[in-house]
Image 1 (tube, rainbow, N blue to C red):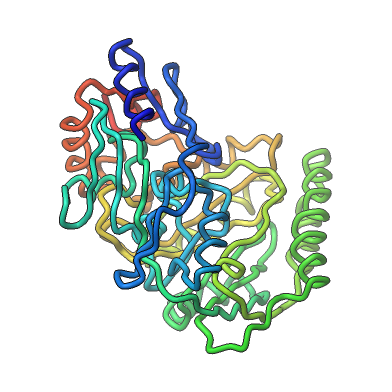
Image 2 (image 1 turned 60 degrees about the horizontal axis):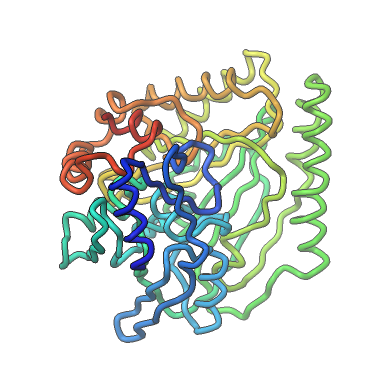
Length: 408
């Protein structure tokens, strides 16, 4: 800790910028710098579990997959998580990583305390009762307020989730979206462009018994089909775009319905080995059906060839100033393109739809918005920038990305 603080002080003496980087999962340049780059390799591990307070304190460089497995061994779990667990805990909260949930929010919404090194090299601890103004904003701080060194999460006794996955027509999903959201603790779906088909997933707590996906079924569906065959299909589509609609129709019918019950991180997360680029926006949850219908209409009439499904998730409103769910129940729409495939035309068309609905871009994924736009869709934007002015007046943690999204 003291070594990190000393690095920040040295950088200040040398007039250099400082940024911390996690696993490099973000598609934006949020962690890029022309100054000192801090890697969190030695800031790993669980510092302690407070069983009476139901919290765990973990070093900021700990990968989520390590945290999830360690908590499970101790009989604990986060309430909700995203479907990727390669990120560090600090990278995940700083960019607003989320899963899907009716009542439980993003990973940052589960944070109960933070420790960070500020621009003058001092170590600041914060929570709802200690430096509460910093705590409120730093849960999703974009790396603009300091370098997070430790995070305290709320946890709960390990529980079971039953996942129900099944195909469903897109129009049925959109017509029944409010009911599907209300009836399930965690609901998400994937729409396959060039088709009217989706694959839905409903996760709900279960009394058991544990009934995980079998080894063979898991390999066949999650590795062979969802990764191996999908990779080949995308390579074919990239080489011969005219084949994409036919491939999409086959892909949308490849996975069969299944139900299984397991501990949370084995239900929430899944292997993602096919490489892609991604844009994701949060829109008001009530606007989701209209947004999806507009996106489908654009794809259908434009001649675009989109080989990746569109992912849709939700989150309840929270009170974090730069959370994409700040102050409103939100639906997330993520568009992807296979790596190496031109994506600008598709993403531009999608972004035009999202911003027409006051969408908020995911901080770690491709977007073109700037501070002028973002200040209009985040009601507490100026609260965050005022805190940044106080904690980092010389912009020690500045970079080109933060200059664009937060202003100078």
